[in-house]
Length: 356
Ligand SMILES: Cc1cc2nc3c(=O)[nH]c(=O)nc-3n(C[C@H](O)[C@H](O)[C@H](O)COP(=O)(O)O)c2cc1C
Image (cartoon, protein in one colour):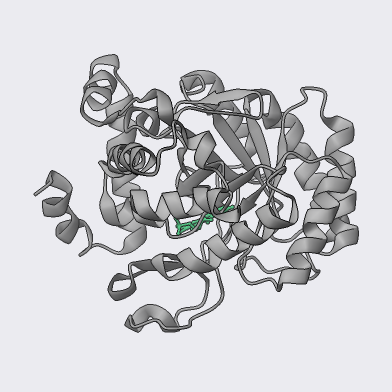
């Protein structure tokens, strides 16, 4: 029995967002001194050469990262590193602070091991995130920055929002993600329309004096043609990869009473759908376009399924909530065992294995 399996029932009596805030406060305290950070590292980090991934000109110590939304404001990146993750994606960061939707806006679906959220891009805004990254320093692991727009922005203003956050935070980033797939922000226009995407990518490429890799994050609910259209645009602009996927508006097969809540569904219920999207992209691009796989990863097996479908890296949020601080270590250990079982000498050798 892990400590978290004893703490979790208690944490789960709290509203989901309160528990999340409490968890983050604990992590922030834990990362604030060198000895506590070292103690976490000793307990939770797991290193193995087979887990290392070279991507985007950066070395990832392992392929298991924290997905956007967990640390929107870059408050606990060092603690997440100490807990054994291979990279952290902060954000979504918007140009100005934003309150997001009214609470409650985050719901556990325990029976389904999922969550529904309609946070609505709550966050401290880019200036505050920049100051924190300067004060705390960036973590020892690669840092992704997920950029977004203000909820009230129209199509033209949205492009300027992405541009501003990009210019402000790209100097800290090992990669940047353009998030055009949030299902719970009130948009008056189609964020994923080809014309809009072209304008965004053109604008960011023109500003990219740091040559930071730029990826785009897509949702799991698009029909295959729309996914492939997006891949065409990504390749047309020479972008560096795709993060697949964001949360879903589907409610298929759910048991929990909270399934009636509106917002984006995450966790186990979207795992297979998200893996299908990864496989579609990898097959269409012959494995040439890097994919960061996310959606329902909570074990070595679920991470490995995404890697074999074509993901070079994976991320998780909901799995971390259900599995606690040992999540990254367990997954990484398990991945090494799965690689050995299947005769691969590295994660990189297993990427896309199911496509052949
Ligand atoms: C509470 C919550 C907030 C999230 N916020 C963001 C966000 O700000 N930007 C983003 O791109 N994705 C956001 N996501 C989506 C996750 O990054 C991820 O794509 C999705 O949850 C699927 O992964 P999971 O099943 O491991 O949670 C959020 C997810 C949750 C649960």
